[in-house]
Length: 609
Image (tube, rainbow, N blue to C red; front, side, top):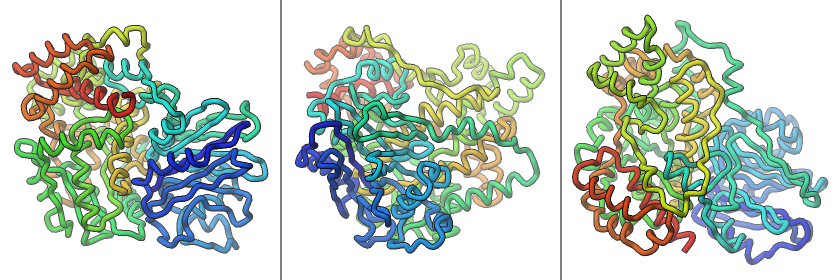
């Protein structure tokens, strides 16, 4: 896990000092080594900040040249099957014991076709000295970041946005992104960021550019999960649980490869419990880290049940309202854009604790809900699709049995169409478009490009979360908060082999009276505490709602009453204050809209003012 920066200039030479200052803004991503290499008479630059994970010797530092000297690579991430990939290059004499050399030599041998062989999380760029071309690619699900800008005949890319702002020399807000965020709650849509002129390379995409030919610049897609899944046979057989057990063990084992200490993020949920079970098959003794809050948000009881007898040494990082607020601005500086909520800040002391114990790599359980239909909203979407059919009553009875919700409440949700869409996971409304201010009235609202329908409403909703909305946001939050403390975060359940296998399962086999993500629960029921395996999804993770109305109230009111908040014109201050007054009076089922207002204002103060 590292930070990369590079660029091409059509005519004028690059400013070396400016490039160095930009790269140094990512020291937190790679504190162990750093270097810039200028090529083509200072018209091409490749820079790297290294966090040593595999092959700790300086011989594995970057930029790294191929054995033939023609290709030069900078790489952020990990390729977990790099040792197996060496078999594709028989006779090669390896100089290092890491994955970077495998990447550059595979590219030298196969060109971009090598991408299909990679299992991992990555963003890398390779410069071809002979053809004077640059090729860059991002992993299948966008676990590792890649941003780029084009200005005055120069094209730059980097792992984070702040270095690009340094190279641009200015920052301006993208009003369409801001309005979309306020009106729909969506962001991380397509290539757009919160900054004008700064683009995101989408997951599964690559870039081709030639030093002397601006017309050669093109972006193409090398991986499409929906297309991959469409070509797979749907599974429904007695071997399913055995196959799932094998796959989970394999992807976790693969993600544990490291030359530095590894730990695990822990919660009391099913996904985390699955991760703990498989991690401890290969690491009998390991540090675990969990955010903990005061009741009723503490998951300590469930974490203790999930880790009992496993050898996980669990560290409970108790979250405090004042401490979280004190970290808000620093976290924003590293996120670079508005982010998800209090739980993101809550990872800051967790990674501090991991650092104090010498743990550099951590595994996290993201992805299971989207792959195996774990959220209540997916179950409700499936129920809504069956409305008016003979299958409805059976499906309704199963839904009622698992979620312990009365029929009248369920059918009220169906009548109000609170199935996915604008509703939060718990069915509440998370934003208030009526408070959008005059400065944004002319801006467009961007809608995400969703995958083609699978025929299942639940699967369509989950696929949207996986590739277009929820997971892209979560991966960005996780990358920035972990790298803020030079920690590599890995998400084994986002392994593409497991994702493709899980998405090919029929939706009707994933939801029943025993719960959502039924095969995962059934498998774990045989291996861990059945109460943990059968527990319903707990959707509210932190006391953010309470803090925004109590402990953080002075901060909220200072922001809403500030001159900068009013003058920006993004949010109508009078409507915001009126809505906050209702919130304080008890109309507080969802706090995300307040978080949006605070988030935007603190972001603007950091990067625009």
